[in-house]
Length: 253
Image 1 (cartoon, rainbow, N blue to C red):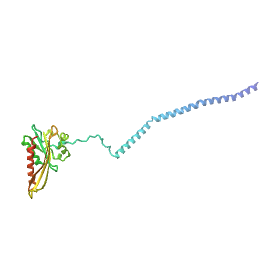
Image 2 (cartoon, one colour; image 1 turned 90 degrees about the vertical axis):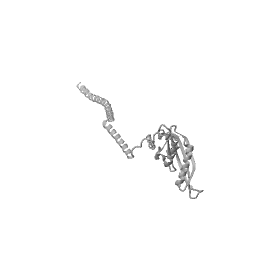
Image 3 (tube, helix red, strand yellow; image 1 turned 60 degrees about the vertical axis):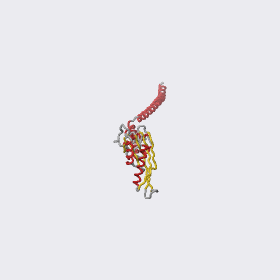
Image 4 (cartoon, one colour; image 1 turned 45 degrees about the horizontal axis):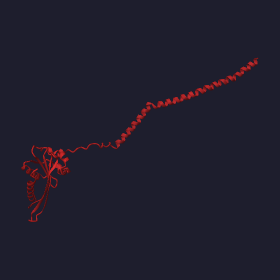
């Protein structure tokens, strides 16, 4: 009876060991997945922390600042950017081409400007034609247009009655009519009398109504001849003939 009891106790030991091993294996199986999940969560947490790490943002901001600085330096090397093409061009001031001391009166004001073949104002001829208009009841003056204007291409446009030029010069403020034109002289030796010189003159004029901004009359006088011993004498004779012709045919507006 005693022997059987001892054998039975000895047989229980392997059984107990086997049970302990099974329990240990079961514990290991349960713990290992938890550790893996914990490790995975730890990795995710670290990754999330890195995404919102302030120091990382500062590094990105620093990099962006450096890129902007490099772009600015690159622009500085090639100079400033060109001005916008939409910048308006400055308008030319035409008031400087007009003698503002001449003002329009209540009567028929006439301003005369005649230039020679070189494009210079012929003061003597301008005054002579102005005198003709004064004798016919008008108020005529000279010197309205300055010499700085008669050398511009717009002067020729004005003789053709360009309304834009009339407006820019504000001519209606100074005169009712503008007589504008050009005189040409040529000289050659006389054939009828030896030792004489013949002067031939041709003049073309435009008479402009500044209010309507239109040409009211075109005047053309050509091949007026005069002779003299010198060019100045021949020119003087020719001028007298030309002015007489103008007075008889074109003195009325």
